[in-house]
Each structure stands twice: as structure tokens, then as C-alpha cells.
Length: 83
Length: 400
Ligand code: SF4
Ligand code: SF4
Image (cartoon, rainbow over all chains, first blue to last red; front, top):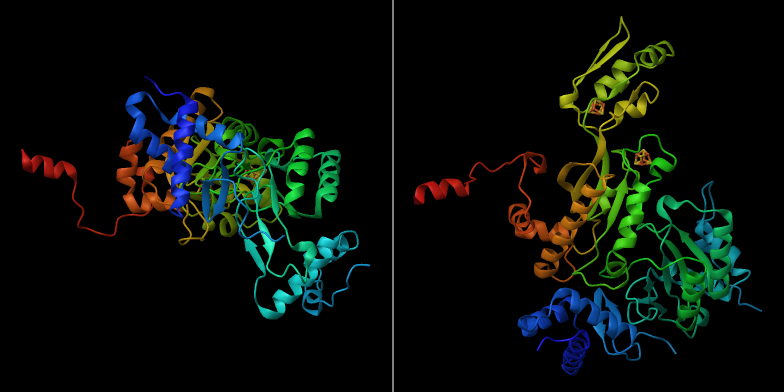
């Protein structure tokens, strides 16, 4: 059965969660590539991945961060931030 | 009562006839604690020859991955008002045309939410708001959007496109830079606000080869106005320039990089061998009343420039020698090509690798093949200096 954008978003969220456990940061393109690799045969394309990322960020489940390049991470307290 | 800092080093930068950012920060410091602490921290940095900012991180507004650059002081106890000092990039209007009313509105918003200090404009082209705290980011964004403004780009996204004043003010514009800059900004809103690239991607639109936005040195895609036919010559005006004392031979003809101009001093007549003209604008700039670009106008598309950050500087090189970019169909084809190139770069580019560096790494030939563009002589940036070049055709013939 073809995957929906919400299902892709959930799968992306899981990838980010796992990466976080290993102390790794993922870029949006890493997530898109991972989704295409796993689910291209189920009809997933770049456009759907873009929409899934938009949903994840608009809902606040993931946030963009910048460390030399832009990454998608779970919301957390900013390490560099001063109280 | 705000703390008063002694700033002998910064004071030096107020001397001289030119504008001084120190003078402006001091003015702002009369109203803003943040600007006052900024003076203190900056003086300390100058004394120690050490920056005291920490960059990056999570700050931004909901849904956007660009437009806010996180910055914190590493001396928050000493300078508490600059403990957070985030930068906000605001998408400038095409060609930087503002009404005074618009400028007052954005300054009022910024005085309400930040230090009141601006940089008009940053090197990308945006209006840059310098210094606010995390809790003010959403409110400033709300006020800006309600007044019709939006954030610009930052991080690994499409940076805010910028253009010269073009046909709005300049008679040399060979296409509508303002329109195309606006079109690209609106078309690629997702790419502007949600970073998805290996690194930044900049568009700059210059109306003619004078390239007032320095696109050839800064932009991943430089769109530079040009013309195909002959330079228009007003013979009477050439005579007037000569009569008024312009040294046409030395100041114009001898400075032509293509050596394609002739001047008959007796008849006071100029002739141009247009097929060799490099469209450099020199002669037109010196004799604007006598010479003008031709009438068959459009743009040259170049790729791959960047300022030195991770690697050294690159100038862009020709991708499409001539495109009638004002024409809707040709503009659509241009956008299709851009998207194709971005796909290839996203697929194969390394983290923090600009498209120009990517092309250097994989080779222009391979890049063109991947994006489906035929190589043509105009794309050669430098004549070859290696005689040991072999062609695929040669191998294919041998194999048969
Ligand atoms: S780049 Fe050319 S068209 Fe644009 S403002 Fe400069 S001189 Fe005028
Ligand atoms: S535009 Fe430049 S290359 Fe062309 S004729 Fe004038 S000076 Fe020569």
C-alpha cells in the first residue's frame, strides 16, 4: 500500500530519534535519501519527503538547527544558550 | 542608570570623515541597554584580540529553518544585556526600493523588539537586524509579517535573492532584474525558509555586465544582462565627446579588452568589430550618451561563484551564453534547469560544499552530462594548458 505523507513524517521522526541516541545529527537531505532508499517502491518521492519535513517542523516535532550547516533535530534546550 | 564603558579603542573608529558604526552604536546606546553592553564587550574584544560570541544552535521561528542566526555572549555575567544577541535577516524588496514609511515601520518594530541596530544591507542583500533575545523572536516575526515583511535565508538554504536597481533606475538594464528576482523569491519560498541543500545557494541578478551586485563573485547562479547584436552608436554624440575634450583613443579605444574598436581622429568616428566585443561595458560607461547596448537583450547565466569560507574564492563561469529571460517560456526553462542542478548537487554534493566546488570536484563535463546540458565553447573558463587531453570519441573509435 502506498505510504502517506504522515507515515513518511513518522518514519523520518524515528530516524531522527535513533540518530539522536547515537549522538548523530541528520540533514534534511539525509532523511529524504533514507526514505527514498527504504520506501521508493511504495511510491515515496522527493516531493512527499519535502511535505513530510514541513509537517514535522510546522508541528514542532522537529526543529532546524545550525552548526556550520542546517540539521533537523528533536527540540531540546540549546547548548550554547545563556539562561 | 546604564553602566558607562570607557572605549578608547572604539573611539579611534569614530575619527575621520567616513561613517562610523561606533558612532551609531553609541547613539543607540542612549536608548538601549543592549547597544550599551555591546560597546563594552566589543572594547574588551579589541583589547584581547578575541571574539566573545558563540554562534549557531536552535534559535529560529516556528516552521522556518532560516532567517535567524543565533548568537550568545560568552561573558553573560559581565554584559547581561547581550547575553542573547541574535541576528534576524529580513527579505529586502527587489532593488532595495523603500518608502520612508516602510523604513519607519521596520525601525519601530526593531526598536520595540531588539537593539535598534541594523545593517542596511548584509552582503546577501537582506536587511539585517542586529541583536535580540530568544523570547522576542516570535513577536518580532509576527510584527514583521503583519506589516508585510518576511524573513530571508540563512544556513543551508536558498539565500535571499538580490538584484540591482535594474530598469527601476538604470538605463543599462538588459532585462527586468526586479521582476525576475521577485519571481525567484516567490517561486522558491520553500527552499528559502526550509534548508534542504548541502550548503547555501545564492541567486543574484545584474541588469548588465557592470554587475553592480557583484554576482560574478558571490552568487551560485549569476544572471547578468547582456545583448546579442551590435552596440548602438550615436555618431553626433561621439563628435560632441571629442569636441568636449574626451581622449577617445587613449581612454576608450586603448582600454577595450577585445581591441575591437577603431577611432578615426580626423573624422571623429568610432567603429566597433562587434563579433569580437566582450560586452564589458567599458566604452559604454565612458561615453554613455554616444554608445548603448544593442537592442537584442537578455542575460548570460553563470554558475559557481563564492566568497572564501570553507574553501577559496571562485568566480562564476558561463552556463548559458544568452537567454531571453524576460520571456516566460525561457524563464520556465531556466527554472527547470535550476531544479535539475539542485537535484544533482543535493544527491552528490558533500556537506558544506558549494555548487562551484562540487563542479570542480566532479568536473564540468560530468556535471553538464548529469544535468543534461550540451557543452559549448562559451563555457570554457580558461584555455586548456594540458596538451594530454583525450576525447571519448577517440577511445570509442579505437574500440570499434
Ligand atoms: S548592473 Fe547594470 S543595469 Fe544594474 S544598476 Fe548596475 S549598471 Fe545598471
Ligand atoms: S563593450 Fe568592451 S569589449 Fe565591447 S567594444 Fe566596448 S570596450 Fe570593447
